[in-house]
Length: 290
Image: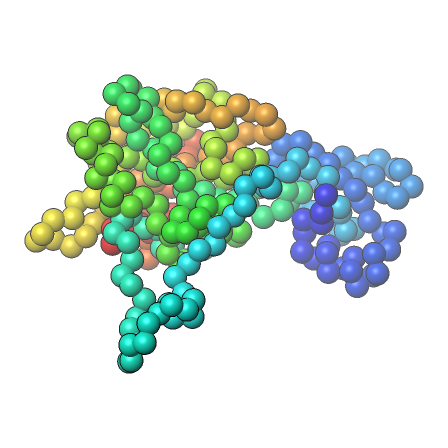
């Protein structure tokens, strides 16, 4: 239970927490919120636009408080134990792997009653030797560094590892000639678990694969004579194994990352396009190997 709209929090605090407030609830994103005032009068609110009156939201929890987040980051000599060397040195080079450094989405995929969005990036690859996909790694706000990033708006910039070079090498050793998808999810309930229906998942993946020659995976093309690069590859597996049970609400699926020259659209400063249901562009991200 909280006030999800920042303007509402400020206005209600300035008013001293007076009785000019509504309590509203909705189960799923974009459901019509049902609200009550302090006298018990019922009203329906817009699912798209918050009212002028401050609203206290009563919604299913979106944070798993049983998991303690870790925010371990490199802090150099400030952490102590740095030794007695003089002159200092810069931070260590980043761990080799696939990184995201920018992202932009065309919408938050989150109704205003549920507050800020919780974007996650998942690495999906072949499950065992089957024709199904497995979720190998997730990056998001409830992950430990170096997989931690917190995007609460349409735009984000920084540096977050999506998959390490060691993970990639181990994956390819177990799955020769198989590559991985980079898939963006807006989480609704349980961090780093994809919750959706099999039908909706298949609709999204089939639409994106069909419109982009199934060149919807990616691979490390770094060589001893070339720059480090993450480039398109053929996606084979489509069905996601072990989708999480739909206990509360479904996650939103902004979609599968497709390299810009395959998608046929370009956005300055970005190199992969996030394609969702019906192959609609829902955003764009910058991926790079380091």
